[in-house]
Image 1 (tube, rainbow, N blue to C red):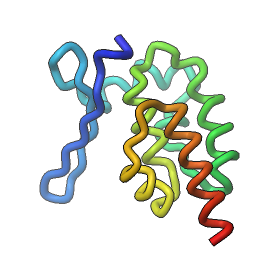
Image 2: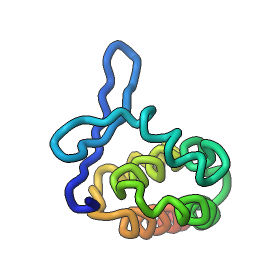
Image 3: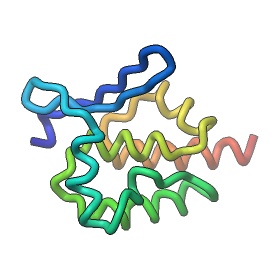
Length: 117
């Protein structure tokens, strides 16, 4: 199913709803989170935010995502992107990474470049 999923975020009137397209139909993220969050003891991955370096955030994210092997990659990508510091996330969106691993690598490169500049 990994290749047949895409992320979807809808914002209407200041309210943002996130979802994924699975098998041609939209599934609300709020419906899926409880199924997967029980495996990690709560909504940790859903609420995880970058507080230090991207490397530290990535390590925490990967540890929480490991037991969620059946969660669509598009959802993991959305959770990772939403947890990044805004300045890193904004640059990353422009680059349009193809997969979660590339997203994580690019986020670290953006941070490294920003530290040098």
